[in-house]
Length: 195
Ligand code: FE
Image (tube, rainbow, N blue to C red; front, side):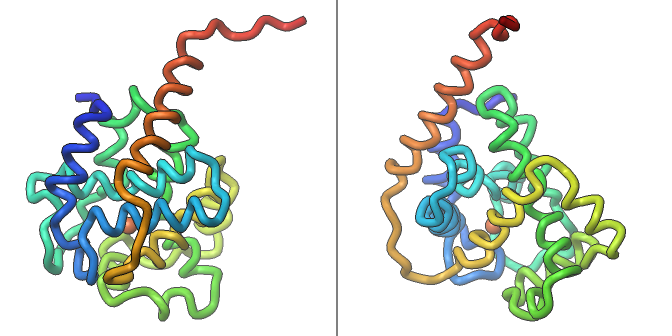
């Protein structure tokens, strides 16, 4: 069930050639642009990795994130989690899990945000339950990693520009490898005992 780094690379470079929903970029171009925007913003390697992998649930679906208008929510933000849990820390998993809810939050509270979404993202918003109520928004933003997921959401929304240049895939695989190595080490270290 758990993916390895090689599995993730394989998924991104093979299934990643599929168009990203109804957008003008492929899944891989979208992932690279999203990770690049996070990196340019000075995010941690964990948030950059979340940006790279936030939509990998689409690539794990049986249709491989095929292009075209869909009529149901594939819940891609949850699909990925069991495959990534052994490899990555909460600081990556939670922004991935919350990035759709972050869209619902921003639609509720930020004037003009919903209207500025791409047509494909507006369509998926409907399938995902639409804008949050004020109460739902307050609950959402009180969660750990809500703010990381909101920032990720903004990179996600901006990472749909046809032809935009980014560092190559291998650049972000290095970041991913660093984060996974750090996580593996942390899991092996005994918890620090109090002084
Ligand atoms: Fe996305």
